[in-house]
Figure 1 (cartoon, rainbow, N blue to C red):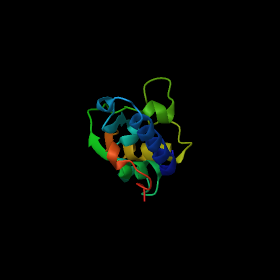
Figure 2 (cartoon, rainbow, N blue to C red; figure 1 turned 180 degrees about the vertical axis):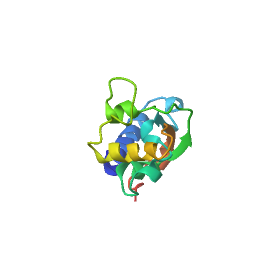
Figure 3 (cartoon, rainbow, N blue to C red; figure 1 turned 90 degrees about the horizontal axis):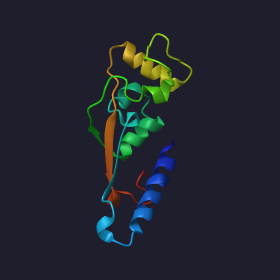
Length: 124
């Protein structure tokens, strides 16, 4: 997802939740835990990649995760993940495998962004 699409999505969420009639039920932040918020992505991917750009838009935080968390979404493997047989078809797959093969630990991460931080132009 491009940074622009991520921004649009967050703006739509803010608009939706701002319209809830009971202000006490409106969220104050968006939060997510996923492999796409792996805190090591800036070491793995180019600085201008969409995932690294997304990490710069939010407040990342560490979460407990296993060594294979989220790898299914990247490699669509049927059984236990094996770097030796994993697909290298995409640049993301190649970058992750290179990182793992050099001893890097794959993990998930968390992020949050306060609703009042979501505004037009917040990516600029």
